[in-house]
Length: 283
Ligand code: PAF
Image 1: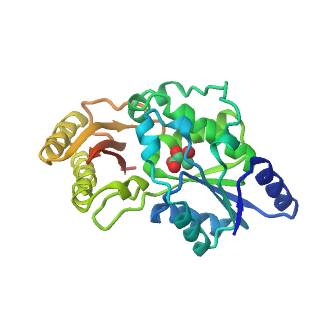
Image 2: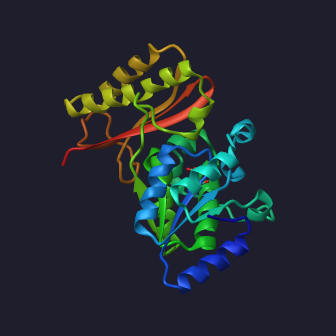
Image 3: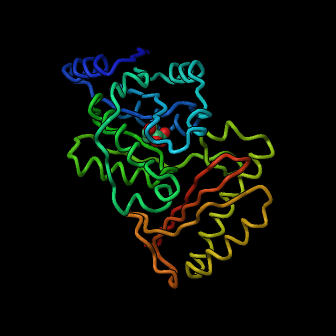
């Protein structure tokens, strides 16, 4: 596996590989890799000649300095995982290389970034959009892979690519879960065993919500029932629970039982912020 740290070098390397007719898959990550990431790497390895994984904890997308400082950075372990899976290139630029100057460009995703993650993490998606635009320019992959745990992020990146005419195809892959149902996340590393058990209730609540909607209960009734379920779990604090259109995150009329819905939640366990979602499509 080649390790590249300079944006100029990655662009040159990718150009050379493309000239040899190789297809390129990019998986952007912030490291602290787990099986959820591995499913993205495997998909890229399957459909592309070359798989590039970027590991970069992007300061521009953190609105909380403590969260940025405490974000896990097990780089040596990540490198081993990538090598063992057969990833071709690890791209790990430093902050200085990625942002030699404080960027002037500020992306604004409008209403799509004003709800859920955008509402509780102001500026988060501007930072995600910026780093993804830079990575797509630096690597120019044929395909770029993202996990659907970050559903809002996936939809915003899809719009970024469309609106700015990037030629890469954006691929979203299903959430990978622990046996307990807990969605895999780098942040899970910071939970104790008890915390991990508590956090599994996030998914139980989502399944309950999904069942209520498919049984014909409306959004308002379901929200109340799920909030009630979560409120009984000591140590779990819900930040938001939203029922939105899974294609564009638009609001769903509260007094209907929708056919298609994405139910999205953010909650704190042991001070760690976790997100998850579930889709219901009844076509
Ligand atoms: O989902 C993440 O890990 C990050 O938001 C991403 C897409 C790598 C951008 O920094």
